[in-house]
Length: 464
View 1 (tube, one colour):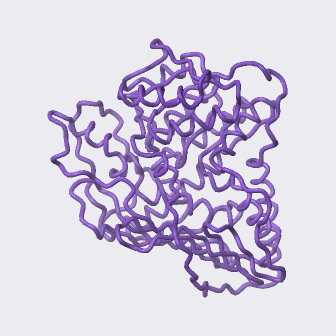
View 2: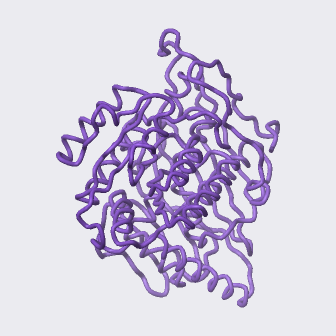
View 3: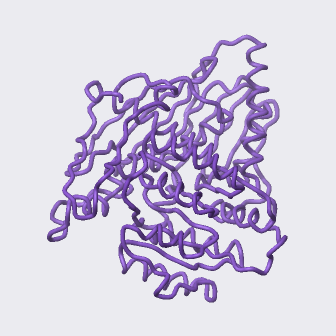
């Protein structure tokens, strides 16, 4: 989504457990049968490339222990933009990460939501919440007021359609950022984020993102082993994200009297692609990110996908299932299966096949079967907490971390898959990155009437 011309942000209004995107699933053995034919020289070249890329990526995410360098006793003022479940959870984790962090300003469009968040955070972290009335901001321009309130760090936990604008404003204002995933819903938004990430590098501002699995110790160890050749050359990946509906669209009878189209859609933002990006982009993007991680964050060649809406919903315009095949160099194919339907098998696993073994990652942790069998047995951690430990540790130590580029590219990988499924076409990475489709209306206001595009129809919906 491109940059909006109005100051616009939204809260997240459902439970943090749902927003964490982690629905427990049962293990399922699925054999990986795809093979690639490649020469020994090609395989060695790709392995070396993946290993070097892996090390470079790891350097951006592996945090030191909480470092207390300069300004150890100073207060780090935190601004919370979006006071829903995910935002409140992230704020709590920020305060846990640093005893001298303090929630300084909060912004939301709903007063009740801001008040509930403030009260709960005050109970959880007594002494670390100082948000008097003059730093409680309500309205469509609340994010701008939070940024102007004197904060040092901001937590961006609004629906992804607005994150490019909010990230740009935060970096322009010189703030360190925790930014939830995904970071955009369309290619113009991704291009904006890449520009903001580059500007953050120049300003030495920290950006830590909400791709939580990259902050999980067990998975870091597993992916490092894969990149070091523990299963040989990666030949295929099958990632699953099968769960129930995340936030079902309510019936029209639930709409409030005189509620505008825009207000109604914002309250139910997950069900509209211009706000949430669709389930593949908003939720299953975690698994898409792990595909990118497996492949060393190199750019794919193209994607082909299928998807649709099997369970009818009155309102909204998103699919409830996808299956995307990402083509990588040297005929490596990575599959992403996503479904959000009631009463179906649930699973959130990763199956990685290599020339000399395989890796299976489930809720029980990663297991590698190859020349040397391996199972993670070291320290476990709370990956959500680790994100904030990393951010505040770097701020305190004077080190620097910027997740912005791979945050943008993993988000784009999911958007690319959605493009392929919506249109029914083979979409190349170059086409996807250069797409001009901007899902965000640039001039909408709270009380406006607005009818978004209907449910996409593969073979009829055009690639733009």
